[in-house]
Length: 75
Image (spheres, rainbow, N blue to C red):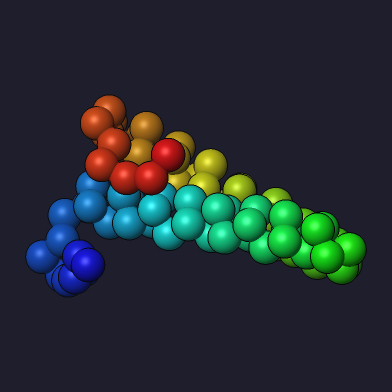
C-alpha cells in the first residue's frame, strides 16, 4: 500500500483522488448488483453512486487539466 505524505507530488495526489473515487464507484456498483439480486431497496445507493461518479469525473478532469496523460491508476 502506498503511504501518502507531504512529500507526495501534486500529480500523485490527483491520482489518489481519482483512485479513491473510482474505488467508491466500483464498490457501489457491486453493492447495487447484490441488492438487486436479493430484491432489496437500492434507491439510496443509486444517489450515492451518482455522487461518486460525479467525484470520479471531477478527479479525471483535474488530471486532464494538470496534463497527466499516463494514468497509473484505476480506470
